[in-house]
Structure formats: C-alpha cells, structure tokens
Image 1 (cartoon, protein in one colour):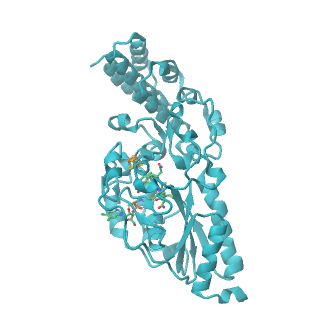
Image 2 (cartoon, protein in one colour):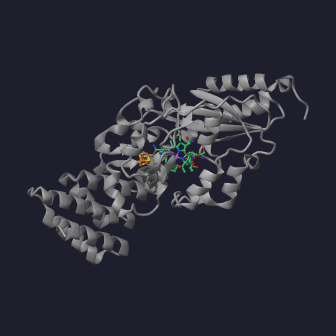
Image 3 (tube, helix red, strand yellow):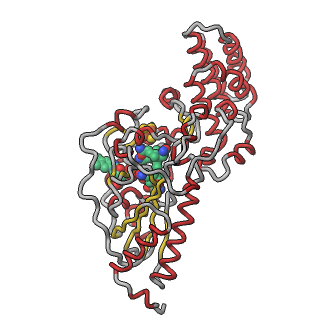
Length: 398
Ligand code: B12
Ligand code: SF4
C-alpha cells in the first residue's frame, strides 16, 4: 500500500501524536508498551489451576490462554500496545443511596464499554487512516484475551496494587482500562519504577469475603463482584451474609485505599450516576423482565440479568433484616417466575425472621414461618423447597 507523508513518522513522533490524540479524546491517561509477551503466564496459569476463575470458563479455554500468552495472535505483526485510562467515579452520591443497596461506582452510569468503544474506535481509525496510513490497529476494553492491567502497568499507567487493581498516583484506581493494538513500532513508556503500596494491607483486611487471599491474588469465587455480576446460579449460602447490601459489584477494596483519597471524578458525563429516584430494594423486586430491561437499558447492570439482579436484591434485604421488606419478599417467594429469585427470597425471609425473633420484637415471625412452610411443601422447584426449609429452620431458631 502506498504510504502517505504521515507514514514516515518515526516511532517517537508517532507515539507523541497518539498520546496527544488520546488525551484529546478525553482519556485521563495514556501510555505505550512494546508488544513482547508479558511475563505473567505463570501467575495466570496458577490462578486458573487453583480454580479461582470460578464459573468464568472462557478465561480457561485453550484459545483464550494462547492469545493471552502471545498477543500477536490478536493482531498480526503486532508491535505496540497503546493503553488508556478512563476515570469513572460518578461525581454524585446516587450510587451510594442506601435505600437502593450499593452499586459499584463503575456501574452507576452508562455502560463503560460503550463509552470506551466510541473513543477507542475513534483512536483506532485515526491511527489507521490519518496518522499511519497502511497500518493496522485494533481496540479492546474488557472485550478480549488481554491481561489489561499487565499491559497498562508496562505502559507506565501505574502499578498493580495488592487488591490486583491498577493504581496510579494522580488517578487512584477509579478508572477503567482500554487498549489499541498497533502493528507499528512506537516508542514505549517506562513502567513505574516501583509499586507504591509498601506495607499497607487495608484492602486485604477490609475485603468482606476474604477474596484477596494473598497480596495480588484475588479468588473470584469469593469476590462480591463475581458473586453479584458474573455468577449465574445461587450465591453460596455461607457467603451471603458477607455480601452485605452490595447489589451489583463491590468497591470496598478501592474505598479503603489511601491512594483514592484524592482521585478525580469522571469528566465523562455519561459515566455519572443515573437517577434512580423513588426506587428502593423492595420496588426492584416487582420488576418483570421488560421493566428490568427498560430501567437498566444501556447500563452495565443488565449483565446480571433480571434473575441475578433480583437474587442480589433479596440477599441485600435479608442482610438488612428489616420487617418492612417482608411483604415484598413474601410476594417474590410466592409469585416470582424464577426459582433463583424465589430461593433467595426464602433465604432473606429466614434471615429477617431470625433477626426479628432475636430482638423479640412484635412482628409477623409466625407468618413468615407459615409462608416458608408453604413454599417448602409446595414450590415446584426442589431448589426453592430446600432453601425454604432451611430458612424456616433458621426462623425457628433451629
Ligand atoms: C475476570 C475479571 C474480573 C473477575 C476476577 C478479578 C481478578 N482479580 O482477576 C471479577 C469478576 C472478580 C472482577 C472483579 C472486578 N473487576 Co474485573 N476484570 C476481569 C478481566 C475480564 C480479566 C482479569 C484477569 O485476567 N484476571 C486473572 C488474574 C490472574 O489476572 P490479574 O489479576 O490481572 O493478574 C495480574 C496481576 O494481578 C499479577 N498477578 C497475578 N497473580 C499474582 C501473584 C503474585 C504472587 C504476583 C506477585 C502477581 C500476580 O500478574 C498479572 C499480570 O500482571 C479484566 C479485563 C481484562 N481482560 O484484563 C477486568 C478488569 C480487571 N476488572 C476491572 C474492574 C474495574 C473490576 C472491579 C473493580 C469491578 C467492581 N467494582 O465490582 C472488581 C475488582 C475486584 C478485584 N479486586 O480484582 C478493571 C480494572 C481496572 C483497574 N483500575 O485495575 C478491568 C481491567 C476491566 C477494564 N477494562 O477496566 N473482574
Ligand atoms: S471487590 Fe469487594 S469482594 Fe472483591 S476483592 Fe475487592 S473488597 Fe473483596
């Protein structure tokens, strides 16, 4: 292909131009890594071998592993990886409205994949068509077999913290990552000289479920983010109390991180918290499939699907333990179309009855037991009958 004048740019000039363009497109940080394979294979394979990926089977597929090992399989003649960071902290507090339960900050606004796609595609096309005609570029953001934090670290965007997230001095960790792979030599940035976590271990100590099993190692099977977003079935009973009132994702390990004290909020308005005024956990339980899709159109929350989301809502209500939630939960137990939701509604009712009973408050513990008894005897799903039986036993103080 004939090369235009811009194709004669050297690696240094091209790298500088790409970084300037990325900042113009609204990314808060950008860096470039050379594309020689990362030295992360052993960590990744050990993580998979220990089963820490849980039900995310795609992470263990031979094709996925081969691509992670050798990024040239993603783009022929790959030479450079342009890494970007997009801040997502939603400036308002709506994501932390306790009547709604807690939603991870990154999920409070529009789905970041869409925001990333728009910007990264613009960068990809600009590189291919204007800056380096004849080159090939390819964007990713949580969309492929790439160890994004590893590349971002190499590109100088920050260091991997003990909670396994990427951290940077100016940005903290409230940012998301994206990449554009390019088949041209671009002058790389140096990785940060050292990691800056030092002796701090606040994230390890604060994690509600003990998912950070050692510094830099997260067991996804215990992580609330996995349990409330990726997991398709029931949340393991022993972990439910630790999930607290997180109904989508979890931010605890980042909230306690000292580097986030001065982290900037998102400049991108699409990532600011969407209004959910008037909504409560109890009201969420009344969402049918259609209403769920409408309420969360364009939001990352749709990833959990209605059943998963309402499962999380039930767990949050059970952990909250307030009698006011009984009517909504009883309705879900009796009427919800999905066994997953009925099962978790049973669990939540058992928790509420146990707590109310312990406080000897005047309330409908008897009624809760009766409802659980009916579900234990008559529900069409064996899973729901078992959950209702166990919940009834708890409600009776057994
Ligand atoms: C699978 C996945 C998850 C899983 C597993 C998490 C995990 N820690 O691996 C679950 C669902 C739990 C999850 C949760 C979250 N995720 Co996630 N997730 C991913 C995904 C798709 C793959 C990550 C992966 O490959 N994990 C496997 C492990 C082994 O890889 P790794 O931790 O990156 O490994 C590196 C280091 O930790 C190190 N390492 C690993 N083991 C060891 C051991 C030792 C001894 C040492 C020294 C080093 C070391 O080596 C690796 C290479 O450098 C990436 C996107 C991508 N393609 O990369 C997003 C991604 C990592 N997630 C992201 C986010 C935002 C989150 C959440 C914060 C969301 C939330 N608020 O609920 C939480 C954070 C949980 C946490 N503490 O990690 C962002 C992170 C942005 C950032 N600033 O770091 C990413 C990059 C998506 C994106 N495009 O922005 N996630
Ligand atoms: S996201 Fe929450 S559950 Fe997952 S490692 Fe961090 S603190 Fe633990």
